[in-house]
Length: 360
Image (cartoon, rainbow, N blue to C red; front, top):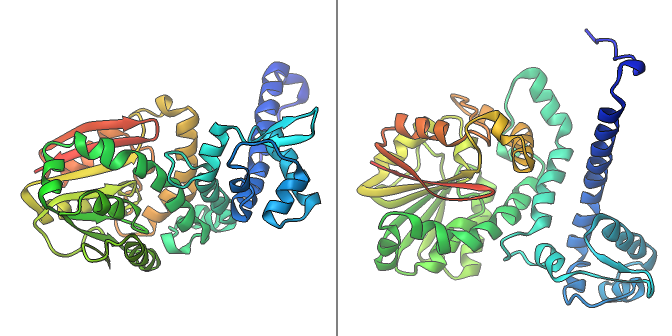
């Protein structure tokens, strides 16, 4: 039953003004998302990566695009803080910081990838709304196709910047094993970015990536060939509770444990497939343990994507644990301990990540 709206005379004018300002900012951000993805797709940002001032005519000529569209696009970038504008000359440029975030997929922050994920959730509004009403889940492969590519492009730069430089060295004795030759399983590997990064860094070790989404595994296999590591890095279609082999020195799960329908069952299977002195590295979205401590910009991102992607994916699987992307360290400890692990600690963190170590 719909409730009657609060009469205008009962509203707090200052709070209403603050909310309208927040809404205007959000509306601008959502609409700007499309212009970023267009700029990324057409190479408009890359054509400005030298950070030199240029006119709309020059950018259109460089990219083979239509001048009138480019002029409007540049105005949108300047209004959004994604480009600088010099009113005296009518020229635009990317600052070094903007170019860093907008043009290189190997940088630790690559903004278009995250916005591609956001765009995929907008495309899935009707699908997720139906799930709300029916209570059913939505599998990874049922989402808009931009989700897979956007996830790869958003998460890979973070792994490039942190995985072998900071996270693995923080684990107890693991890097030495990898350098001398170890066996590694990467569970929920998606398109294989994390697996391949490790394979490139540790040429004496062997790696296998598992994921239940077949299309992602096909992409991962090709990526391994392209990276020249296919002989030491294979990819198989398998779920987290039934992937094969065993005796792994290291098992990794990157930003995927909370998506699993039965994370406790997955933890138990990881334990069964580890070598006696093996290590499980778990990377999850950063979260505090209490909701009130996550009411911030990072929490906003993760709660939103959890509502539209992570929770529906978990609900599409058996058990339907539905951890969500803001489970927090205490809840993750419970899951890992219930799977049979006796040692658990945080080894690193970033504003976007919790990096955890579990041992038998």
